[in-house]
Amino acid sequence: MDQLAAIRKQFPALHQKVNNQPLVYLDNAATSQKPEAVIRVVEKFYRTQNANVHRGAHQLSEQATSAFEAARSTVRSFINADSDEEIIWTRGTTEGINLIAQSYARPLLKSGDEILLTELEHHANIVPWQIVAEQTGATIRVVPITDNGDLDLPKFSTLLSSKTRIVSLTHISNALGTINPVAGLVRQAHEAGAIVVIDGAQAAPHLEIDVQRLGCDFYLFSGHKLFAPTGIGVLYGRKALLEAMPPWQSGGEMIKRVSFNGTTYNDLPFKFEAGTPNISGALGLAEAIRFLNSLDRKALARHERALMSRAIELCSAIPGFTRIGRPTAGASILSFQLNSHHQQDVGLMLDQQGIAVRTGHHCAMPLMERLGLPGTIRASFCFYNTLDEVELFASALQQIAAGGTFSSSEVVSDQAIFDSSPFGREIDDQEILTRLTAMGSWNDRYREIMLLGKKLPAFTAAMKTEQDRISGCESDAWLKISRDPQGALWFAADSDARVIRGLIALVMAALNGQQPEKILAYNVDHYFDQLQLTRHLSPSRGNGLKAIIEAVKNAARESANNS
Ligand SMILES: *Cc1c(COP(=O)(O)O)cnc(C)c1O
Image (cartoon, rainbow, N blue to C red):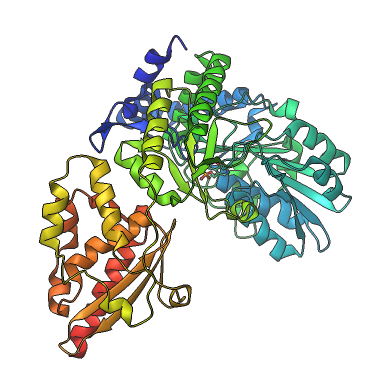
């Protein structure tokens, strides 16, 4: 794409180093980066325009109100809605679906009614329906997918019946990239007498959306995946439906008149916008739309397809690479696994090279269950990514694959696990520091960490008890603690991710076999800082390492109190 360099220049966050490497941002399906124009609009609002909307009898408030309402019109035209009254500001897709479930569905549904979802859905399009089903006695039916990750269309037709009141489905799957043929599905659903909700969180950034042509009843998306700030999103609803719906949240702004004898609600769209809205977010979203509209969106889409094809081509040549899902129509989302490498290990090793991907269940646990996988690694491309970045990504993956597989550790029995752990005896934290800081490249250091992890004796399946489980978001770990006659604490731990085993080994080297007071006084943060691994302690990692350290310290605290 000719303008690629110019476009990239608009996104300041793309031009930074992460882990001493230029950032390669391939997590666009989680959230997109923001262009200068959007950042400027938000800043300008707080510098010179800040006032509450629809309230003050003063100049600033009037200006803020007109800008806010103009933003609504920009959104209306972006998705070709019929009127501004059909555009409701929300915090995002999640809030929009909750609003529909509680305000539209809850008064409507009766026992025996059905809500039709699909196996591709994000939790945001599952859980609000489960709650309303429980509240009303309605039943949830789920359209299966085919093995390549397409919606099973004949099954869709079969499951659709006169009992179906609501069909709610994603336009594009965030986990597999499947683009659903929504217009046809809307027609079928309408013929069956159901209304259709479309989760457009992944589609709005990549496809041109025309809600009238799609014919859907509700359409939702989030600003933050569309180059706009977080905390702003859009619910589109057909006016006739919105008018008949009761308010969801209540308070200021959504009323016309309040008295203790009764309250009259405001007109659309304000009826659904209780409280002070995210004004700067709405202005930022309108600016993001103007930014997109200033570009040739067809060319952007072509470039995204080129990135995706190149990624598939390069990755397919990597030994052990397995693509998850091969949808007939797909967006620029590549889900995969690397044989014998835990997804979290791959994510951490890519991160070490400045390459940001997502690993895990992608908030689509039912889909992962259907695929029989704990999760996948997902690279999601955006028009500001380059073919060079795709090549860097593929070659990093190639290196990880070539890094070889480690045979699994020796499995030992319950008590022996403490005796056979070398940490705290042969290797201590000083030795770890000397070894690891001497290694220059991320590759060597990670290999060493994983080799250390390999020395941790593995738990047998029976030893991995619920009681000993320490849950992280992406991998699980187990921790057992024993105290010797001298009062020292010994730890044995295991994890299904190799990098986590390695990180646990580092912790064990420092803390194992120590007296409780010493464990309590030990500064793990400082230790990881020296190892340049601090971010592995971040709670957002969800890797359970922080929880393990906490459990170790708690055990030491208890032990100290008891002695
Ligand atoms: C991100 C996403 C959501 C949730 O969006 P929020 O912005 O977190 O509310 C819902 N559905 C899909 C398909 C998504 O990708």
